[in-house]
Length: 137
Image 1 (cartoon, rainbow, N blue to C red):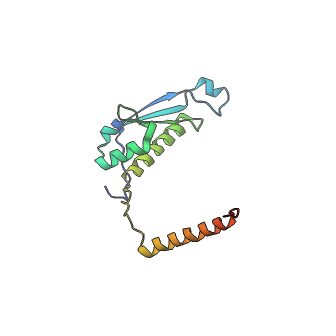
Image 2 (image 1 turned 180 degrees about the vertical axis):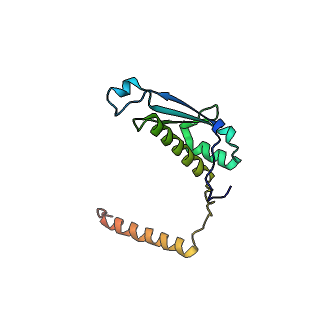
Image 3 (image 1 turned 90 degrees about the vertical axis):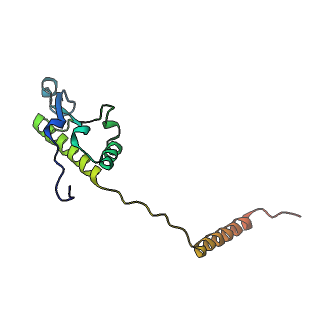
């Protein structure tokens, strides 16, 4: 898969159910189940091991023990708008999982930088020591 083409989510990996939503909509909220709960079976996506582990990390508590990513969308008043929102959020999550994070290269401070830091600490300690109450020895 190249980075230019989006990841295609197979329909058989998705299942959705509609639930009663809270929020705007007046009495319509009490009558119509407009919120959508989208479930995606991660094992049916055929992800690489890296993408699977990254998706697991990004999804966090949205991924259950059965290997499903559960996304609930209830921002809009219609089922169709909530369905589109949930699918877009899932696609974005999967796309993020495919992006490889660059490996961190450990660096080491130079000897001069270490000496400079120690010197600055010594000077700062001298300034603080000068503020102390004079000792009568």
